[in-house]
Length: 517
Ligand code: AMP
Ligand code: MG
Image (cartoon, rainbow, N blue to C red):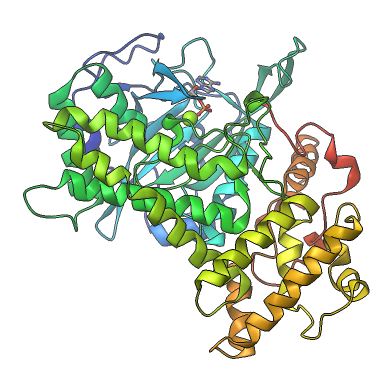
């Protein structure tokens, strides 16, 4: 175990690339630089609200004492750290947005464990050269969301950045939460995020846009050597790009397994490691609605709705390919790689759906069963999580509508129309028959379904309630959720296995959210 304050941090990113070392925090363009030095701006009264023991133990970081808590709040930087904000660009909602960069994220240094580097990064620690007109801060509400969801996704088995700590700052921050001209002061907070790398598609896009081909080439090779060391040979870029395609497809399949909607799949929010990154107006699906977007800014186009995530993944990969194009004589190989995305995605997707349904393999007829099921679910819109829990124990002799309603009744938000009940019943009968042909045992089938279908998900209304409590100084629900999210496939936390309550359906922050954070 080593303490945050005494650790000999590595600073390999800042050693490897040209950066702006001025430390100037005024907003500006930084041509030629891949990062800008940024010392965090101290806060009034740092207090540790949460520390992630599991992650700290994994990385062998000792429990934070006074001086360490100052580091977690941005009030202290050690001599071994080289704090910086990364420079990146991005496509936002389909449009080129130019330079963006870490406007409120500051990487303090790299913590090495078992030969692997981990960036320790503060979010909300004050302005950087990339803050544009904003303040570089984060409110408690969005920080609690990022802290809890990072760990929830980790325990669900979905690739994600992690969160080591959550600190309140004692400072107030002005936010116009509903973008309606009614700004109000909210509590500030800082999260320490951890990932092997926070590099995004946008870090590559900016170099191509600025025509800094040497920097681009160097960043690509650095990324491959450091994070994809198994890729060897003389031509590494295409095999690497193919792996980024594969990881991105896998990530989105995992989102669909658990019913997660990211909400802001801009290319600056797409990790080069295939992790879920930058949690903003995300949501799990309560009712199964492929058209659901949790992001109020995403209306009316619903570009980032649940059902659009697979195609947005490809659109974003295409932007990455365009950024890599200057490293090739022609675009044929990149095109060819992009053309593999759909097959890769759908193969993974059907395999995952087969697991959700407890099928030993997915044959052609099974694919039809899966898409028919999805079609009827999209019409009936049952609670996705509860539906799959009930599906595990589908009665073998299911034959009557009454039986269907008795078994599945609790997952419906509104009673399905008669013809929909009949369609669902027919489908589930076919499903029951199909399950009997499994070459795995009944208990193996259930175990497969149990491991694939989460029983606890961090619903937005639960987060909303936990945040309201925390804002009043109470942490009971917050702590309960922290415990439950560590064991999302067990039945230990069935007090949370409930549909979204009626009151939460229309309430801001419980279903849809703005980007204000
Ligand atoms: P996001 O949509 O949250 O991923 O953010 C898009 C861009 O806006 C990124 O460059 C962020 O760093 C920046 N940004 C968001 N909120 C703030 C803030 N409060 N202060 C400074 N920059 C911000
Ligand atoms: Mg972002």
